[in-house]
Amino acid sequence: MTTVVVVADAEEQLTEIVHWWFEHRREAPMLVLEEFERCVTLLEHTPDVGTSFRRARIPGVRRVLLGRTKHFVYYVHDAAHDVVYVIAVWGAPLGGDPLLRTPR
Image: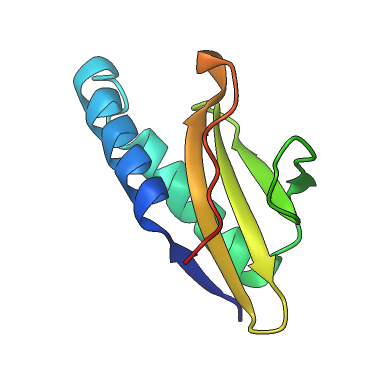
């Protein structure tokens, strides 16, 4: 099974999204976190499932859409070390692209 590491930038973004979702989506306050956790499980078992994100300056960036909450999870798969680095969590409705940094 592949190890999934959420880097600091992505963790901060996810925390902000979870707080916003909790305050503004009273009918399903934990949905975004539940979708993210399912995405992590998916990446642990099928790390190349996401579509290539060619607008990134970092080679090999892929992304997966969290279907119900409309957020993208951006990641890089280091196949040599069997690790997926989640580098951003970004709301698709916001438009634009997140600032993507090489995982450290």
